[in-house]
Amino acid sequence: MDGKTQVFLQKIKDSGNWNDEYDYSKVEYVSSTEKVIVIYKKFGTEYLITPSMLLGSTKCVGKNPQ
Image 1 (cartoon, rainbow, N blue to C red):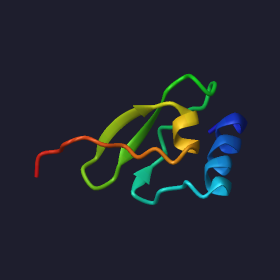
Image 2 (image 1 turned 135 degrees about the horizontal axis):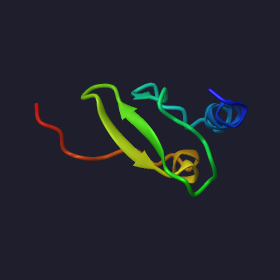
Image 3 (image 1 turned 120 degrees about the vertical axis):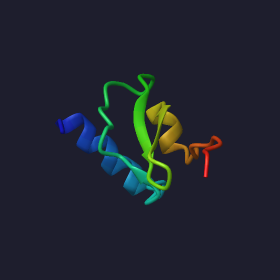
Image 4 (image 1 turned 30 degrees about the vertical axis):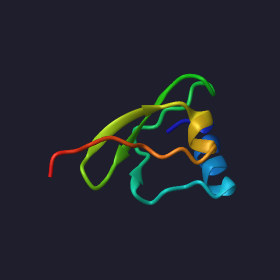
Protein backbone atom coordinates (compact mmCIF):
# COMPACT_ATOMS: atom_id res chain seq x y z
CA MET A 1 0.00 0.00 0.00
CA ASP A 2 1.46 3.33 -1.00
CA GLY A 3 1.66 6.46 1.12
CA LYS A 4 -1.18 8.30 -0.65
CA THR A 5 -3.52 5.39 0.03
CA GLN A 6 -2.50 5.21 3.69
CA VAL A 7 -3.12 8.94 4.11
CA PHE A 8 -6.51 8.64 2.42
CA LEU A 9 -7.60 5.71 4.62
CA GLN A 10 -6.53 7.67 7.70
CA LYS A 11 -8.66 10.63 6.51
CA ILE A 12 -11.68 8.31 6.36
CA LYS A 13 -10.99 7.19 9.94
CA ASP A 14 -10.42 10.74 11.16
CA SER A 15 -13.64 11.96 9.52
CA GLY A 16 -15.66 9.34 11.41
CA ASN A 17 -16.83 7.70 8.20
CA TRP A 18 -14.84 4.46 8.53
CA ASN A 19 -17.24 1.53 8.14
CA ASP A 20 -16.25 -1.84 9.63
CA GLU A 21 -18.68 -3.54 7.22
CA TYR A 22 -16.28 -2.70 4.38
CA ASP A 23 -12.97 -4.26 3.40
CA TYR A 24 -10.66 -1.49 2.18
CA SER A 25 -7.84 -3.84 1.10
CA LYS A 26 -8.32 -3.10 -2.63
CA VAL A 27 -8.34 0.67 -2.22
CA GLU A 28 -5.62 2.34 -4.31
CA TYR A 29 -5.95 6.10 -3.98
CA VAL A 30 -5.00 8.07 -7.10
CA SER A 31 -7.15 11.21 -6.86
CA SER A 32 -10.42 12.39 -5.34
CA THR A 33 -12.26 11.65 -8.59
CA GLU A 34 -10.64 8.31 -9.51
CA LYS A 35 -12.90 5.54 -8.18
CA VAL A 36 -11.59 2.99 -5.69
CA ILE A 37 -12.77 -0.54 -4.91
CA VAL A 38 -14.50 -1.17 -1.58
CA ILE A 39 -15.71 -4.65 -0.65
CA TYR A 40 -18.90 -5.19 1.33
CA LYS A 41 -17.82 -7.96 3.72
CA LYS A 42 -21.24 -9.55 4.27
CA PHE A 43 -21.63 -10.58 0.63
CA GLY A 44 -18.08 -10.14 -0.70
CA THR A 45 -19.36 -7.74 -3.35
CA GLU A 46 -17.11 -5.05 -4.78
CA TYR A 47 -18.18 -1.47 -5.38
CA LEU A 48 -16.49 1.32 -7.31
CA ILE A 49 -16.89 4.57 -5.41
CA THR A 50 -15.14 7.92 -5.50
CA PRO A 51 -12.92 8.77 -2.53
CA SER A 52 -14.83 12.00 -2.00
CA MET A 53 -18.04 9.99 -1.56
CA LEU A 54 -16.38 7.77 1.07
CA LEU A 55 -15.28 10.86 2.95
CA GLY A 56 -18.84 12.15 2.79
CA SER A 57 -20.25 9.03 4.50
CA THR A 58 -21.88 7.57 1.39
CA LYS A 59 -22.86 3.93 1.86
CA CYS A 60 -22.49 1.22 -0.77
CA VAL A 61 -25.92 0.00 -1.78
CA GLY A 62 -27.22 -2.73 -3.99
CA LYS A 63 -29.18 -5.93 -3.88
CA ASN A 64 -27.36 -9.16 -3.25
CA PRO A 65 -28.68 -12.73 -3.50
CA GLN A 66 -29.15 -14.44 -0.17
